[in-house]
Image 1: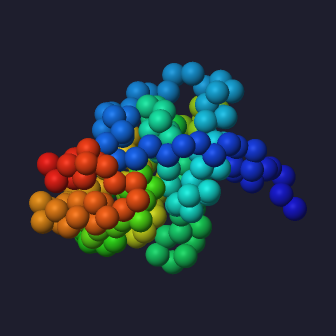
Image 2: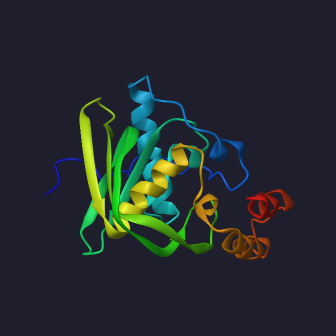
Length: 189
């Protein structure tokens, strides 16, 4: 029997910010108010992530320029990692680099081989201000690095070679959410 609610069960699904939305391309501000609004944001982020069938979501992906992300992500051994981090800092990213398929809820339906470190460690706090340290390997490490990138104003396409970005831009141009501004952003690099 659970003694706490399922994350997102009382949250609202928020609209997703898509590539070229300015909030995705600017560094997020640190959280300074740890009140009820922050708890509501985290709950809504979980609801939005689950509705979009994602494994991680940064606050700027729902239009909020604050340093917060949520995750419900397996690692390579299929161990589930579930939680949130406020004011996260990527304090370690090491091991060998792995090029693997990476997608993003802000670039729906697309993915590209992206290099990430095999291991990542993120430190920050929870909504109540208590410290948290999260270590991930494999796919979960990829998720942690991806979400920290979002909070620094980057999307995974920013890590691609010009050739791979060009391929992604062509694929984006065929998507239902494509606009000239969005595909141009990918082409410009």
